[in-house]
Image (cartoon, rainbow over all chains, first blue to last red; front, side, top):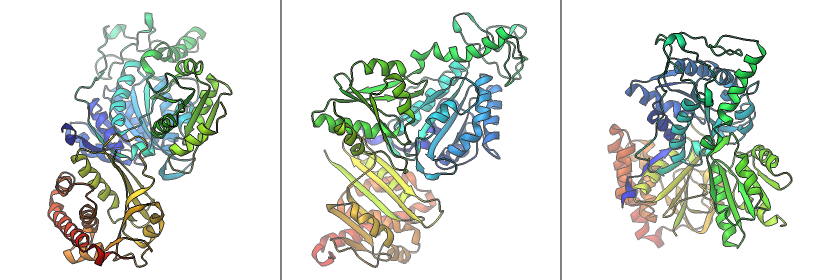
Length: 376
Length: 185
């Protein structure tokens, strides 16, 4: 029996291993429950592969450090939880604006403020999308298992490099703190930063290339001199207030994600073919939902599950398609209904929510209660 | 489909989360699917601490055990708190060193902490308990737990933990053989 060789991994450990496999070589962070094991693991393992681990003085500087490392050509990551995530927002906006690839792991705990350090939550769904000021898109991934903590972290780095954007791994405290047997994939796809196709004098790091092609970010110190700023900038990176250039700069941020939704958005469908009721759930709650689908099917109820693996950009088109077939959406979450709001946007008035904020996972029974109570 | 739900409970510092990880590791070596979640307070020591395991032949969706097949209670508070989560035919195992008031149901009672102290060091009480759980329930194979110890423990702590496993297995087996004599009602 081959399965005996499975590894027993902790979600945070798997996330850190995924980062190493993706080629991450700088971690800067400030330990915080329930993400601490990521820093703990990397403080031991990163030096072994020639990487750098820095425990910074706080989360603001942690985010700054990984942005700096990325500009120097090193894949970089930080990990935190709610309170630290709040502190990282300003520099996260900077990374989005300056188009600097990096990965931020947020293992969500109960909030607001210090909240419940050792208890899980999914309260940062909206903060991960709208936590910074101004308008910019962001890519947010939500794993449901320890295996996905590994595979999606690799995917996060690939998306970051491909789209020159910060990517957030939004794990809930249950997935982050769960132990599970996993078989790591033997082959993984790793996307590295492409070489520039122009000589230094011609290089414009923020150029608008035809067909929406993204300009490779050249590491500092390689002879390519350019300017990086959080201000609205022209194609060379210098601040600008010229109408056309401002519009170009901001539009580009939006469209580099919007034009590639088909590549970025990942979802999982379970038993949706003939479903009357569709559960929309992500992270660990999706596992409760899957169990609820099995229970419901045993009772003869036609229930299916849509699991957004990519939370942002939100898989709205998938939802709209499904809403043509199903009569009701049920949205269980470990918050007061953040994804629920997004579901409502796609299919007004046909969604109910199952919320839980006491630091425990939504149970299959709670979801079943809503399903059975729904008058179809 | 066999699926076993377990809870190892006690106070922070008794090694219940490590114990859960060891048991989970052994179950993986047995070829099972496992999920383990834990719950603990912000304290470094003290406070309630528990690990919750599901050991299953099939893939596991909902990862939190609800009705326990096996509960280990390493102190009074956790015994009081988690006995209600036990199935009607579930197995309760308590550390009789620290559990003074025994619940009015069938259970096994072994002085894990006292045995650990006698063996030289109190911190191995968790592994002694694991040994007894295995002897009493066959939840994982002893050889798998031994493997788990080897793969997960620091080398210098391995001998004392292997000794602890032996003690636990011995005590558990003793109890199982003389089942009528040792059952406490």
